[in-house]
Length: 282
Image (cartoon, rainbow, N blue to C red; front, side):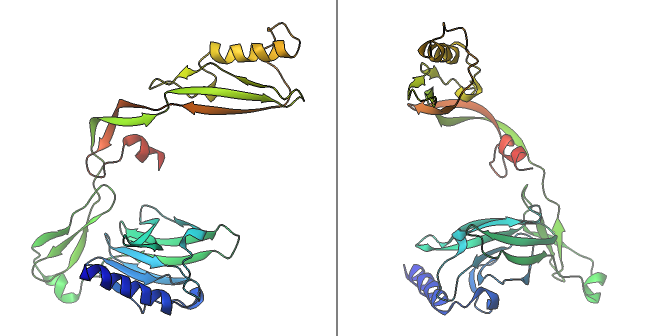
């Protein structure tokens, strides 16, 4: 309880003392843990991190107003630097931050694009370990893993004698087959509203949503959609054979009910993401 109050007090102080983005510095730093710091975003500035380190960057105007959610954040090299948005502390739900994770040696630029068209925000981060000194180069190293490598970032090994640090290569994803519970709609109904002036709305029958079944908008379920098109043709004076109707229509899809199904997925045992999700990010 005492720790939570202290964190709130420090963050409140930072919000009060926050200065303009153009003059933001890293002078005010809170140690969140051994490898995590909370700092002000340094507009057009630079920073250095070690692989595995995390920075939580506050982005505020002169009055201390949080601006993080008014920008879309990205990394110029997501293999070097992972950029997301998050809360500074779970107990302080009004304070957002740019959550930056250093993954491996390299340089990347954090960019925030304003959703209101204001000037973009940028900050360059160099991820690196300190270079060996002359004394460290002569050492017969005895290594100890001080930060394990994962499939998302490199690790670090440290010499027990001279304290030199070197990177450990990032692991490859390792997949295991798992049955995962997925919640999805029980049925789909496609609705088509005619804009020819008649004001009529047409619907398909409820289409069961089995796993592996394509969404109704794919028109791959056949008769349900064809039946609706025939009804549209007949409503406009046709005989139901003209199912490739032109004209102006607005079409959408309603989702009905909810079901939980077990599906087979390949999950990485290190990061717990599915293979489909990982491949989609490449």
